[in-house]
Length: 371
Image 1 (tube, helix red, strand yellow):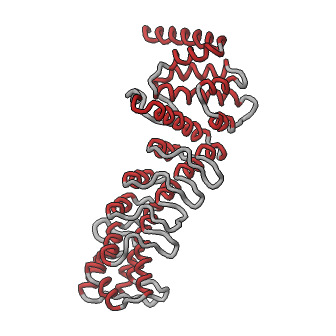
Image 2 (tube, rainbow, N blue to C red; image 1 turned 30 degrees about the vertical axis):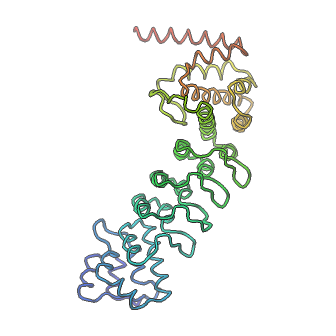
Image 3 (cartoon, rainbow, N blue to C red; image 1 turned 90 degrees about the vertical axis):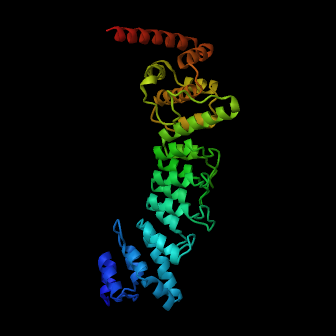
């Protein structure tokens, strides 16, 4: 294959052997018959925790001497390849050396991808943090297919996502399809990523090339959990905007979240709502309730889109009631009393059943407590 000992040592990742060969002045910068330069090969190796072949190359002066002696286009392209291979495999030390001695941090390769995008795509949080500390351009406008934030979402790297947002990455940045990261997370149905982006305060009104909001993308993709989360967020942030500085933070017992509620504190009221939805509500009644609670037409439609048969209205009603409960808890209202007062005005029979169910469950709870 036309390889000398130094090239073999670089390919195998033998740092100690590379250092010995450098000490003996036996380091080389030639290519083998496959046209892989020593530097490129070394960057491809998964580096050892303490020392790496690429570090040894640089410390020994092999890289610098090669650059000094053969400053031509092909060598620069090889250095470019080394940077992206090192970024792909998360070799922070190798990337740092290349950026210090040779490469420009915002440079892109022939595929129009930066080192930050490569590191983000592969979930290398420490390398991403290192690049961010070097003032890398987060919003490089070179028509990328996806921004670093989009890549973090697509590849489900929450820790990388957190690092990017902490560095003030634009949470509403658009890709070529005019989609925000939330659009992408909603389409994938990734509850954890959607939760993260919603709590970070992303814009819920942005539409993509097809004119769809993230909510519309979620219901089109039949992501019922995500649909409910986005509706909760829309209602919560609308309430905050309406009340401005006069609002109070949620009770410590109810930490802000848009996920499904499985807490012990709300089990009683959730049981009541389940009974109401599956045993008391009739078809089309939940829509009337939703309207009285200021659900928008799009929110009601988004819930209805997850149709599972003639009895879908029960599931839809239950989801709407749980969304209402989320908003009520976040505004520190008393759920059962609030529900009874609202239902009594338009659904007197339901109100009476709610009252009876509440009294029955209260008495059971007391008996359990005594026993």
